[in-house]
Every structure is written in structure tokens, then in C-alpha cells.
Length: 281
Image (tube, rainbow, N blue to C red; front, side, top):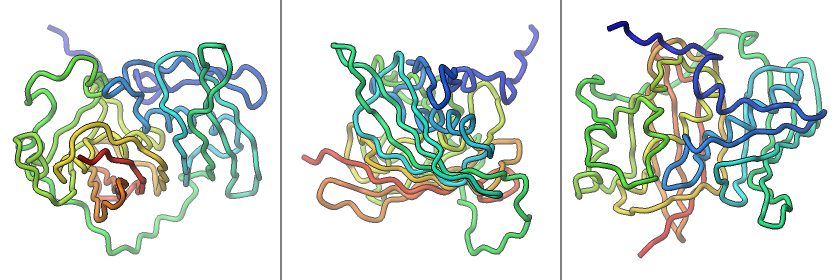
């Protein structure tokens, strides 16, 4: 039997599902796909990629350098509109803001997310690296475990995992066995299931696609994002990514998650921090 061809950047389901259609200057339409939901909520990283695509069209520079999002209300699959505004344009950086809206039962617009972002050209950056950061130590992929290795998922809770290549470090899987480590760490190999290589927009997904670190702290259930800031450092090389997420402080029902994303050449390609809410007790 012939082997299915690998998706490329531009031909992937991810590209189709994050593509926006320009209705007018600064106004874009999209139908949010149910394929990127978890526990019936649209994934925050997928939504950030949608807004990132709209801003890439609205701004004169192609690549997100930094993007900060505040998640105001939960998004659901279905029609949405993105409204963008160019704040400033310069020679090396341009800045814009964008909001995603959906509609209530009366047809009124409800704002779901608001972002502020600066864009540039990652290809124009100098290739000097001076860092004390080191890639995470994750066992080889064949010694890690994915959603397909666990019990049957709860109906409606795992659509996004069908679209991801996710192999979790066994040392961060205690929660799945009923023995969370208490360390607030999650590490995994990451990619898209159809084989599409990573680019700056899929990095916006990668930082928010692993199970919450709250699981390893012994807390189960939905962990909604309040705010998420992502820094894209360079265009990733082809091949699987390694993602490491840590939480150092949970207080008052909120925790932070710090993520690093490394490519196949051991280059740090993205970093993020988010504030998330947890339901205790």
C-alpha cells in the first residue's frame, strides 16, 4: 500500500483551519474548527495561531516576535471574526493589536481574545547565540508515551490529540497512573500528526498543547488560560520539537506555566509564560 505523503507548510490541516479570509481592511472571517478542542473548549494555542495569521496579513512584517493574549471568554467551534488594528510600523518591527469575536444568541458580538503583538522578519536576524539555556533531557521518542498508549478518552475531550504527534516523557506521566509527582513539570516530543514541519505559527500552538502541569501537581480538570505571552526566537529547523513546561508557584487558584520549545538542532525557538486558573478542592 502506498504511504501517505507528508503534509507541508501551507498544505496541512493546521494551515487550513487557521486560515482567515479578509472581508475588509482589518476585518477577517474564520470558522473555528472543532478539530482543535479539548474538553469541548477550543485550544488557546490554536486560537493564538488564528490571530497570528490575521496580524501577519495586516502588518508589513511576516513573523511574530512577541505576542501577548488575554483570554476573555471561552471560544467555541463555529463562525468568528477577527478585527485588527495597526499600532505602529517601523523598519525592523511593526506592532498591531487584534481581537477575536463570536456571536451570542441575539447575534451580538462577544469578544473572546484580545492580543498585542510585534512582528518582524526572523530571517533577517543575526545568527549569534549566547545562552545558558540547555535543551530538556527527554528519553528517545520510542521510550515516551502518547495519548494512543493510554485508556480510551472521554467522548468529546480529545479532538486536538488526533491532530498532534505527542510523546510524553514518562517521568512527567505520574498523573496518568494515579501518582502525580508534585513537581509541576511536563515534557514531550511535539509535532503535527500529518508530518508538517514547524513554523512560527505552529510554535504558537506548541506552547499550549501539552497536558497542564497542574496534573502533575495532583489537580485534575480544566485549567483555562487567563493570559499567554509567547516569544518566537527563530524559525525552527525541520523535525520534531521538544517542549518543556514548568510551574513553580500555585497560589490563590492561579499558576504560571513557563514553556521552552527546542528544535531538532538544539536551538531554543520559542518561549512563553502563561497565567492559568485552577479549580481547587
